[in-house]
Length: 224
Image (cartoon, rainbow, N blue to C red; front, side):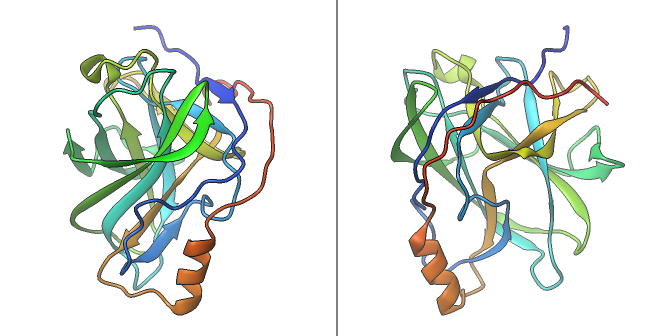
């Protein structure tokens, strides 16, 4: 199938509150969402078709993932449920490897409304609690979160919200095709519920994210 470019739909989100955050969990990787604006989305949906992945690096002593959290939205109609596939890829030069290191299919994802709109409909905060995933420190990995709205009946493809347009992400139409590189920076963070956060960290999580900013979304550059 012919590759389709990544599409960014601009919008305005004034604040994103940290719904569903575990009371006893420490953030081991923050992709910039907690204290940054979120004003656009990138389609990541098998029905589009398009898969998106964003990179992360864990520090020594913080290499076990037990929780994955992210933000996303649909069209004007929100489906009753989701059919997410969560994958973690090793790095292949500057993009994900062809096959995943970790894969979770049809996982039971928690979903909470943010009370805000994106792309003409409400946006949501998602949480996934997993069996501990142990990775290596100071090593680049790629997190891919893909919904399948053909199964759950959404009217428009699912979009992964972004905290900015200035980063670098990877995308591909289907599993058999090569990963491309494009501009963008998805909104997610990783936690470990076996680590109790410092009091100052809890204050930051309670503050959430504030500010109003509009940014015209742009089509990312082509494959490298």
